[in-house]
Image 1 (spheres, rainbow, N blue to C red):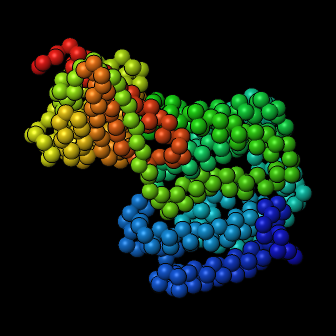
Image 2: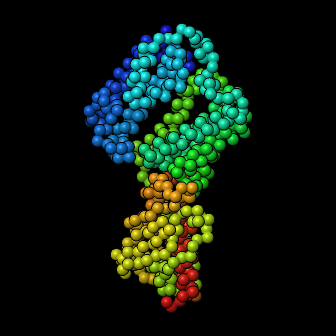
Image 3: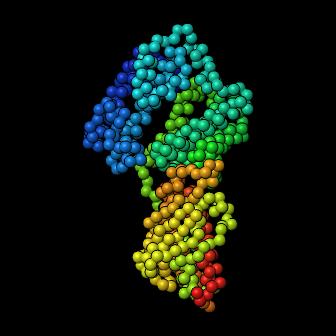
Length: 463
């Protein structure tokens, strides 16, 4: 069987076992020598066959990688992508020629087991009982997608939603990173895949494709809530960015499902979609962008002199329970402030509903300025969930206060302008989107404290 170079990139058609073995061996030889050159001359590392199962012997887990190790792995992954695609395409072709279901292509990505899988494909003869035309006459996805609109929609939503849950678990537990791959790439590819599967048997309308795309993200949210992976508040925060991206993906899927030529290569395209979000997430993890420090300032005017306001700034009494829906839904809120010591070096504890911020005083300029750093941050929220307690990784180290200050400015007629400032960073991307939420939350926290200080200074003058 003659194979052209262009055939290595097209998932349709078949390939015999001889071509599969030759191209596989040549491809592996090229990839191994390329990796050896990269490891030896660019990163000054030894490289052998067993390094493919353990490229970094001294790394205990992915999140421990730093510096040259991340750059090394990123380079290996980047150079591996075209080889992976060719391998998936050839494996699909070989499965067809052997009369096997293309769904077995998932074993291509199974460590160790894929070696036995390649050996079996290299030995199996071409299937003579079924002609190529018949094998290609019924695309792979048609074996389990119903003909009816309702049935195909149900399959698309459930399959894509459940796969989305698996991808989120993989990214959150292995990479522990919340970024573009999770909040942008995943909902987009889910919407695209759901619409494409929905219209696989016959073309569907744009509104129905959009509905299926949005429902797939809804199933993802329900699954994460049911498995105690996330709480209601975080899902509410994520939906304004996830749903529009899913609809955009659904729009692309609508145009894609109208192109009937894609049916033959559906498994390969589906595998590519599944790998897109983890691939983006892995690239972010390797690059490890440094979180930016943001500033939130809030102010209030108080009918009391600086000296009275200062007394409640340094330490304030118990604040009544919150009425705001944001705090009642689980977002951490301030309760009281305590001071230990006097002047620079003293330690202020601002007690929240989830714990206490420990704030060593840096500037004590009575009664004008109180500035402090933050050495301990409690969890930013207590997730609203059907379960008693859940502990998603983003509750620890992803929203961190760096410091804060109170600035008191005298105004005419014995009044005071009180300004509260917080410097913070968060490890969530896209950063501009999540800053909308974090800035709003911190501003509400500021106003809860500033309002309480105002009421205390006005009601209890001369304490």
